[in-house]
Image (cartoon, rainbow, N blue to C red; front, side, top):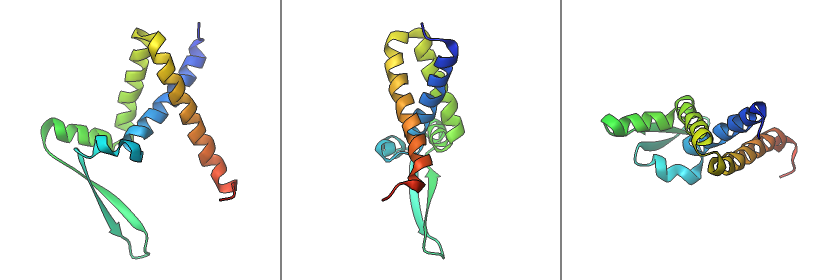
Amino acid sequence: MISSWFMLFLLIFASFRLTRLLVYDKITNFLRKPFHEEIEEIEPDGSKQTYIIIKGKGIRRWIGELLSCYWCTGIWCAAILYLGWVFFPTISIYVISILTIAGCASIVETLLSPFLDR
């Protein structure tokens, strides 16, 4: 049996990774595209700035708002992962474990990237 503290650790990092996957990662852009229009503008200093315009009305707009808010999406991701663990522990532990490993690896990459030669 997995201790409750260790499971909390797993759920925290799995939720972190799933949320980033849905809100920011390029690989899931196809999920956001029906709900967001991305506009790139060149700033006076030459940098690019990307802005999101939420599409539609009703449920489409609600989903667009949800997918543009890291905090909102994070609550839903945490709830889905937790409920998966409660009701389908045998299957969900694999998904939670993979997301936890990926989440911790992304944090390590972010912390170490300034020190790595590239």
